[in-house]
Amino acid sequence: MPRYPASFALLAGLLTAACSSPTDVEPLTISLRVPAFPTQAERAAWPSSPTVQGGATLVVRGTAFPGCGRLEAHAQRRDNVVGVEIRAVDTDRICLAIIHSYPVEVTVSGLAPGVYRVRVGMAGVQQRMEGTATIAEQ
Image (cartoon, rainbow, N blue to C red; front, side, top):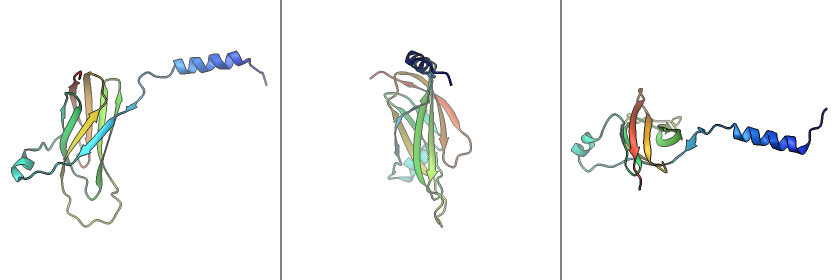
């Protein structure tokens, strides 16, 4: 078996690191809130399809259908594309409840200023939504 000098191993390591993709997926800081509305009119005004809003942070609002599961949100960024997933988890337990919808608001922070394409998947909603949001400098 041939033996290579230590300098060859160092060069191979540097070349491998240099070839790693600059567009790797970056996880983001995210918070999920299920707002409570004091009146039925306020609840009816909440968007049923996902909406995307920029500003200091990225905000996604919509209505999820988690069945008997609890809601959980995840977000990640690759280049200028942000993916937001609102999922139902712990759905394998016994459940006799009627399927309810829940208003959800997801806030994604830590994005650099710029324009992002946002793809949203919402629990219980078949179609994914895509929009754009501009994150402003703070």
